[in-house]
Amino acid sequence: MMGLAVSALFSAALLILLPEAIRMADMPLEFGGQGRTYLLKLSCIPAGLLVFFCIEYVLLILPRLLKVGVLLPLDAKLGWCQYLMRLFWGILVENALSMKNGDSATPRPVAQSPRHRSSCLKCSAINFAQIAPMAWMILLGDSVHNFMDGMAIAVGFTESPTVGVAICLCILFEELPHELGDFAVLITAGFSVKLAICANFVSACTAYLGLIIGLVIGEVSSGALYVFAATSGVFLHVSLADMLPSIRGTLEEAEKKHGSSLGIFVIQVGGLITGYACVLGVIFASDYISF
Image 1 (spheres, one colour):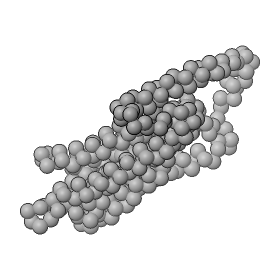
Image 2: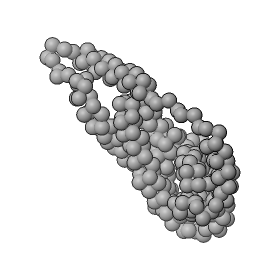
Image 3: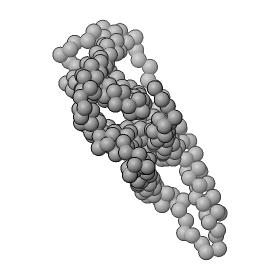
Image 4: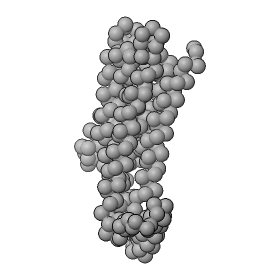
């Protein structure tokens, strides 16, 4: 899900919002414009991002493979197919051994005493003074983020249905893991479950305020262009500065805990490709959709 959100936000900012902000997609090819050829050029950017993401993963697991002797020197008499089969088989064997050792070393949960459970029930009342300041900062940042999302959706639909649908799709992919993460942080900071749900709902309501302002700005001739440019900056920052390091951190954590992260890596690469394909599909489907 995180890889899907990163790819959708990055691709929407690069392939939809920025071209709309500089009017790159307005001029058809038969009138001297670029038509859809700019998509091929801009697609090289996420392709390069994916290639270097895979290279970083290889560099991440390379010390482990060298340590266990999975990477053997290539013999001249050994064919490439046999070498790759031996490499893949070595990774599978190592993963099975690491999972077996991890299961045997997993400590059993300690049962809580009734006295401890009763004390936890007595402390269930929330004291706002004891809530960590980080929780309030997260709610404030989430409110501003939702405000920008609502404004971007409104301006997108006033400009073009394609842009509006693409922005909604990207925000949907991004908000699912984002809101779940914020909910977990609020619970850790001292919120109860009901209070965390109410706080997330209140912060989400700022999107309606952004929606109203976006509808007003969308009626201005050049106002939508600046909103598209600003929204693309927000999407690029959230995808590259916030979510992409989190993906790499997940891989590193899996390497430390389980000794392997191949399955997580495959899922994340699939999410990156799926997010890009969804945005590209919305762009090409817009040629056959009329409102």
